Length: 180
Ligand SMILES: [Zn+2]
Image (cartoon, rainbow, N blue to C red; front, side, top):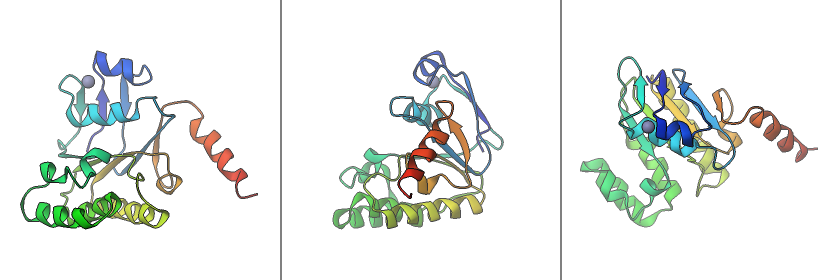
């Protein structure tokens, strides 16, 4: 489980001027406008050598973004039998379906940390809800999930990390107007 990250100089500059960001066990959602540094934070967590991560036990990180999930690139990231299944499926399916395969085929260990950058991309509403279910299942097995997203399906029961004060509230208000 990742508890906190102390950002290096480079990342502090990219991520809303923050230095330390805290996370909860379970389901974490990062919200903020485009360009506020959500993707940078996810990449910092996953691979920056200069950022300092605190977490016990030390988590294994699994990172997913649009590029990784691109069916034509999947072979680089998924090896072995699971990789073969995913690659084969990828030839015939949208990237959305590939994402769902990954969540289904991974056998996560307790304490693993799943990092997802806008998992809603390329999905219809049904697909988004399936992914959300997959993430709930991961959390139930004791994994941590950190997701950067614009999609309200991912907002419920979350610990929020807001990259702009009041951002979520203002979005929610705008969203309500559609249902009047
Ligand atoms: Zn860094």
